[in-house]
Length: 361
Image (tube, rainbow, N blue to C red; front, top):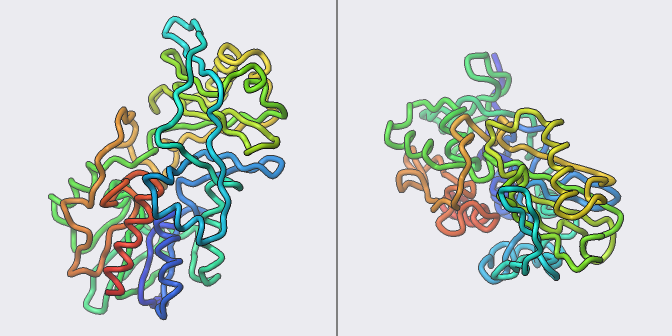
């Protein structure tokens, strides 16, 4: 018979919300385990490195004026940040392909980036969590409420599980839509709750992002900020994605075409290079490194419901007005369930704090 590991609290999902919840619990006299489906922690925070610089292919920015939680956490952890570079003019590409220089559109309020990429936040939080408390390559397939607590199975649906855990409390630190679409709940969740979970769109799940790295910031040298918008594509939005005041330098941004049309990566990469050359000059088509991430192709981020693009930022909330179910033993976390700033890093922290506070009382 398969042994069952028992802890006080199980956290499903090792993105920012789950890792922050674990960090908060590690400061209390309580046992916990984080179950992460991927081979890495961080979730939608992904930062490939090149010559000591880490490109953000997930969230890039935080806004100190409106994001007090993450601002305070960054200071508490001793991390350093720098302002998003926005000095200079912008570029705009019309639907006919013509490009013109326009005044820049600085973010308001001003945004900042982290040295080491946003993953430096995950790495620093991980240092405060017991080594064996985080289990990667542990996809949860079944969550069952039992007389003795909550039983969680790891593996694939419709196949025998290969690991089981039991806990008194559980934190669902993953997007509600992903949980509803990929995890079997016993007893079955109500139709109203399941539909509410499926209707909450996963932020970034339908998006794709690129980062092109260069030895010199040639756009800055011609008075450009690196910011550009396009009605033509494939890129719809571009920003300076450089290190602070030294190389390497970079351009980064978002693909503007729908996920269903992004099925030829090599062809899309060629189109991105051609567009960068049109907007910023021939040198832009010759990066020293290039990174691309299509979140719609990530099985532990997106579902088939996430393929249509989001054109506006949703108003996020807990599903069906409930922050916890099963007599207060299963708690929703993850940025899509935040009371404020849902979809942002700030929301991920707020949702984790709420879940942990409800558990600890």
